[in-house]
Amino acid sequence: MNLEEARKAFEVAVTEHSQEFELFFLSKLYGLSYSYTDKTCEITFEPKGFSFNPQGSLHGGVITTIMDISMGHLLKKNQGAGVTLEIKVQFIKSIKNGKCKCIGKILKMGRSVAFMASELFDQDGELCAVASSTWKIIEYKTGD
Image 1 (spheres, one colour):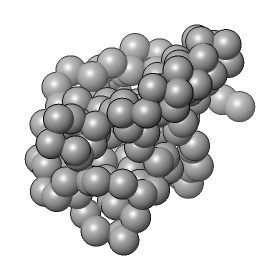
Image 2: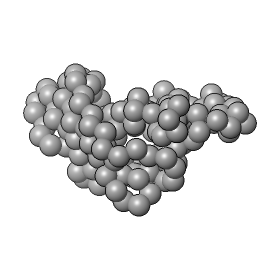
Image 3: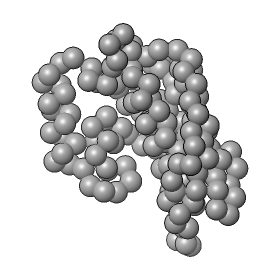
């Protein structure tokens, strides 16, 4: 792990974060960038050394966190804020380096519950993890 890289990432997260979607602490710490369509939330990021496990690959907890963020941000954008009721992640291929892309999708939207999915790809476009989750909608979006 590069101590200076970790120190800089933490400093950016501490000084630049706010308790808003896309700007919260973990988003800043991991250097997440967001883009949206009506049906997806795409997050791009380049994993930093402090987020790797002892085997030298991106830690499963970090992967799960970013996949959860992709689904939560999409839900917020389309319906309103929610909380994760359950999440299942399947790890398919390890990530050792390079820019990654995570795409959150809505599978089915109910009045109070949403069913969502997320896929994580490495720099070569290979699928590395898939997630499915159930969300409780706690804030409903009103007309724009």
